[in-house]
Image 1: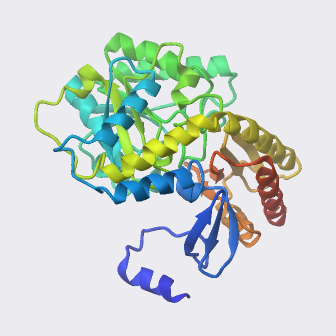
Image 2: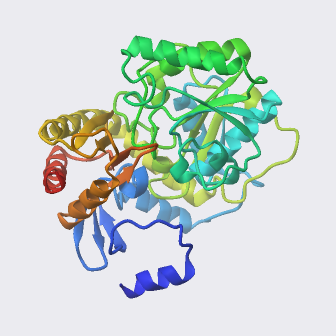
Length: 427
């Protein structure tokens, strides 16, 4: 046990998860690579949980942060803040929401917490619809609506939550149906739930479920849900904490795969926009954002330092078409991994879009989760010089692959080769 690991265990909570039997300390990074305190170099296919969106130590972001730190780091939302206004203008314009207002937070958890506050206040209802297998954060209210038992330490909640089918395409009671029938069955389930409860405030859904193992419904499912929700006045909250900013390649926002019935009422975001600095936020129509009848501020949301980082990071993302790169390189990586998976009995499915890829593992010859092999693959990949993540919901185990969006074809091939060796060692 390293000295740092021993110190960690003495002062930090037992439930604070660490990867690997011998946890590593990452000391620095550059591009798509990081180094640990022992000098080992790794290709980073997890990006600090989908957060290093463009690149490690991106010069444009580093320069913006350094220059802003030399002027002022923080003043709170009680004062006018030029970088915050400028980033809000960019985000509102990109959101697809008419008459959009933006509120900045420090995390995705806080963003979803704020979205729930807005929706319940606007609708005068504390009932929330959420998806099975979902994850929305670690605050009291977001844990209360999370549909993933592994990440829900309490059943206590200020909200009444009802869970809807549809977030997982290849498991559950509708898995054997074709896409059209699957969507119809999920819509019928939603209608049935609405007949058994008082009017809910909102449906909150991740377009691609992150912690749940990068699962998603057929395109158009949430548009079909939206048609039902509109008839009841129920809001649609798209949790884009992991899917936003072009990571899926095909779309800038994950909800755009379900856009036939218009944009969400509320969008939440975080992670990648800050490239490692703490930015989260909520986008909503003005009438919803402005519905609160009490004072509110944010001490650290929108602080100048993080706003400068977000502006520089977003500009780099757009100017270098990293969404297009995610589509091209991610598509190659998915096909490469599917070719490998076809030869291995323990790989149930390779799924995802762009540079948001899940590899679901099962015990060979069964449809049962194989968390032991998932952990073993994680370890072997690290030994080979590759960092990946893992996740999964009810009776599932999946590897999570989400590199910075500037990943090159050569790096994708290198990472796929390391992961292939790790998978073959397990199966």
